[in-house]
Length: 342
Image (cartoon, rainbow, N blue to C red; front, side, top):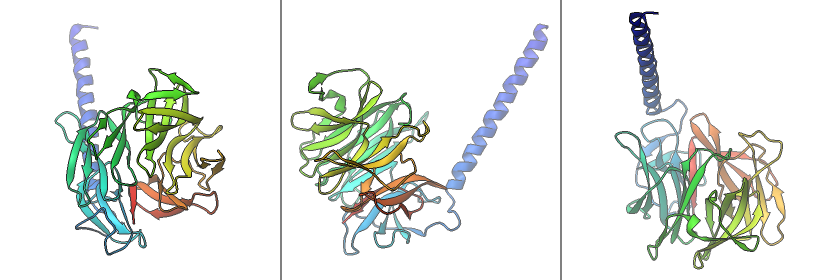
């Protein structure tokens, strides 16, 4: 083949790749534009004032609105008594969110010239920014302690799914009373099987705080296994308690955790079932939700938990009793990362 023919073939390949790239860009832009248009049958959403305290209207749910339209990804609110009703959108966008006692933590994308960055923003009861911290990766979990004095968040810094083993996370804890910022739980002393433990493959995620705001539970992964750990914020230690516990969420009474557990025989991409753990007896109870839930549940009250599952427009929220009884029920469509206030 002559040099001229080779140059022509190369030019044709480059032109073809440019066309494919252009079509992909147009499709992505069209998809993004579609998400800015409200879908038929979607919830009514209006812009308004939003508070992280219940107020005169009674208990409320604040969440990331996933419904397509101009308020997509904004924090929105509905009464607990009318979860499928009209939504009030705040204008504040979050990828992950949680709130308690008038404090919110909002994990946001920051638009950049080449690629997006991310930051964790502490919000007051009126959604005003109190402080912000840059994030090292993609936001995935967020929690505020029951008293509103502590915030924690987890990001992916390598990989983007808990389903496999090829990922790395970083979990941070911020004390809003003192300003102390622990950028990574990997700096804490690890006590595993009664001995101090170190390993380069350690990862933490899914913090849930105790009511006294002195301790927390979370997941630690190492050696291909996951462990439930209890952390002591004063001693800066984490202690392993049992295996195969991920994304724990502590009940309001502090006696039970609901978590996702890998169950043998399930598909590798959907390996989890929800379980409740009695901390005193160590007894585990499977919940009635039989689908794989890749989420850290939120307690509505002392009896029921809420969690997300994939939906037509991103994610829908479901509830299920925390004692293994009953059946799952959809709470609301096109919603993610709820906080139940009041």
